Image (tube, rainbow, N blue to C red):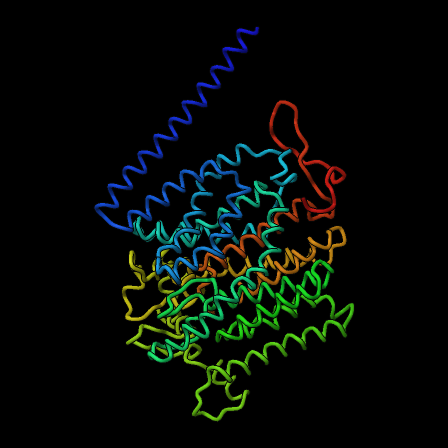
Length: 534
């Protein structure tokens, strides 16, 4: 027996040694090919093989490190690579991170452990409405892409936005990460507003004036915080504003429940307010009162004075931002009141149903939707209902879509315009239904006394995040093209699945109970699960 155990131990050691040697050889080969390709193709090859090397390494890193790494990469690192190092292709990094998570998902699922402290101890489950909407959306996307025989490169580039980061939702809805990890990520989000303040100040008082002196377009376009862009062109200022609205909502929600001291909450709110005030982000001005009103919606019935005061404060903040915008960005030669300036701000060419600039290829938001309607009718029911396929409206360095190349202007003006062109009325309707179902799914947990204060706060702020991102569909392209915004949305919907899995839809929590010799989970009664999240 001792000899047998010794032989088995030696076998395991040899297996581990061979594994280590194989992994080392793969690293050496990737490095050798990377060096050769760099000599021939330059820096592009260096970036590609570096990503390949880290991708291979990422196959073996536990998810409890991979998900926070994706979060830090998305909100802290990539924007600086784009803005300061001018590496535009760095925006692929979070999406490829998602692709890596998608590749390893089946293997992580096979290693799912009901007893691991790093995974959910229950079965997460999405609401039926959310699942049905997502099923229709992705089936429409796949069907439309196959019917129109889209070029493989176009499919791959479009999958970057349509598919890759949705791996995060898979991880959460299959319980491969713990609710506590999602909570830690979510509560740190507002503190990123503090970290980006030096960037916002630098961009506003150094970069923006230099742009104004050189007549390089709207100076506020350069103010993007940590979200990336071109100092001499546009950037992700809209995504930054949306993030700050969500960050302020999280801070207010946590302060209300006594989870955040008043001084810290004031600091966070002030940092978010300053970021919005120094960059002319019109949409954020509209979103602020909506976000805070949603947080206090239940208070209006229970404590009407407190609820009304909160809404008045929200509108006061928005009015103050408009005054600051007028002070900074209004034409000095025009003598306008704040109301006149506001009217001119929100009645811009982007909202003109007929605005098209053939020189700059710009089209208004309303004009883009109106133009799509003009180009489709009941005589072409296929493209009207399911669109032209993934990437049809894309205009990029690598791919120009079949629909986009027909017109001398950019038809992909907003997420809704892109969806209408690529997945038609059916797919667009499914996306809208997805947002509505996700909001109501989260909102029903806000006043649920079975949840801890932390969980109720998470549900409230995530419901706000879903609404804020959903309202951006006709306004911007963040839902599809901003990896930060996608990550916020997927964390919110994934946490909804966790809440439903832990507390059920009938008022009773559920959890894993082991089954002897099968390795398969079955549902157990609520008494085996603690009332708060891990």
